Image (cartoon, rainbow, N blue to C red; front, side, top):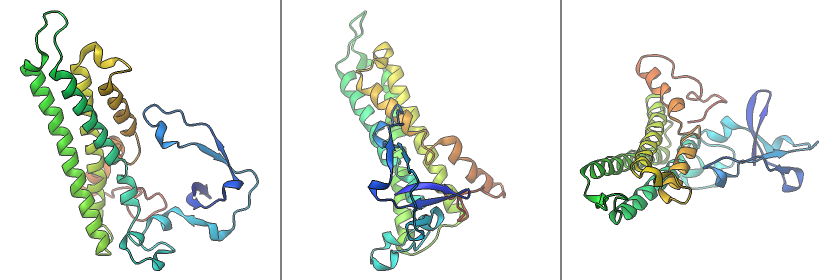
Length: 244
């Protein structure tokens, strides 16, 4: 299945593997594992029954939901899809924290041989990063429970709920970014080496935080607009641009 624009509107298109070619165009630092490559469809006819507007795919009760008993097939898909990077984001930040603690416990200053772990500045900054990652996880867990409870009740989210979900995603990404960046900066020059696992985790967090579903600058304005009595903008009212 692939996403194609048709007359300016996004559509999900189902294609047999023999009908398209994969173009090796994805060389993104921190996001190589997503393998979001381009595909080329040379002169292929796609019948109507294999084309679905993205809004229909993302909304409640898409085609096919009626043949499944579980609520997950009839729930709004867009809010969950947009939240999918949160688990990897938080998990990667937790990995950076674990590696930093392990490395810092035994680390000694290069000049005076002092035990780095005894520095109050190191302890305070470590605590701050740990608290930010924990806060990100608490917010994410709360929102996942909320989304599934709403889905089980068959309830569509209102504007306040939708804008809060996207706001929280942006906040979570920013917390993970700040926490991992602080850990890297505390390690000095060693925190910038390619083989440093803390730096590797930071690069991955940095890459994931640019994804549209969690990008801070993209996901914050809708809640601010809603809170100030303005239209929250496209993507929150069931339009073809729906992305929450």
